Image (tube, rainbow, N blue to C red; front, side):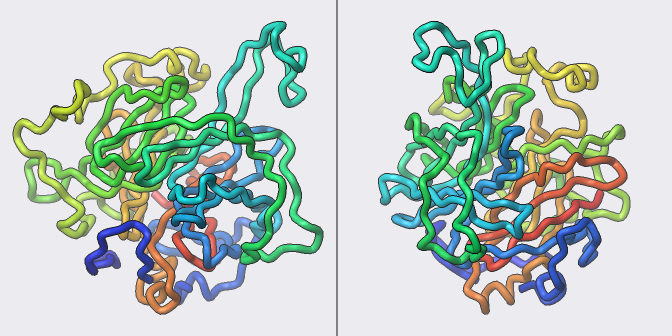
Length: 412
């Protein structure tokens, strides 16, 4: 059974609880294996602020600063967006406070939009020094809030600031510099629970996938931020004819395992998805007649019936391997945390079915977290390293108030 928090908790901001094996090992900046677990290999351990109530991680998509890892944190009057440099032991380069201060920050993701310029642009058609046939790619970051129904959009400057020379202390919360994130817009949103939890950008379809703590994943159009459809995350369990819905889906990360062979099912010797011992509070049986949310015309369990406009512009590689007209290949998935579960779940981006469960319960065990005053696993990001069938997918993972961040390789 996986380590779970069985105590009653009514808010996301309550604090509950270094792995005895992985966290006691020395850090390594190479790809040598520090610790082998059944579902992952630990490759590197770096510092993480014990005061960061982590709500999401996301890697920069810009080629000019693709080493930057962004972290969104929560709590009222404490929410920030931090920029870290993984090549410098996760040195914190910038901290940007979420304004106004009462907002409780939640999930973040980087994305981009292609803008067509005209003569009215004050800079003569030049943004961040890039100009190509009057179209420029603008890199942005979007952030959700918990219960305020407000989101923020920031423009990312190409050149990040650097931390003060000699300052490598990630726990220095007083450090504040002029941010390279420029707030350019705010928007309102609504979900099934009226909350915002996780968000990730899917470039192949030009969509955001959003979670709200329920069993649903919402698909938003990047440009309009309007909901296009929603899907219930489901799990098939042994001995049960019908799938069950998995609630409390949290941080999200779009990934591509980039293998030639479809490995969306159980991995040899891996953690069988049907053996996942979820506490009953996280499951909700599909009741007859609840396939349609009465408050919307969007089917709760609808699949993607037609290719979106964004999918039409997918890369040649994606188009050539597109097996069902959705813009996705068999190696593309959504990875997610489940609140107070020490696992990552791999979700099919079209059907929202869970195809794999990765057990991370030994990376920073619950009993140790409780002693340390740390909270639950939360935070997933790709590292930027290209994955392969032989090596597997590399990720950065951490949690709320955790003293460390971990670079791992998932094992299938």
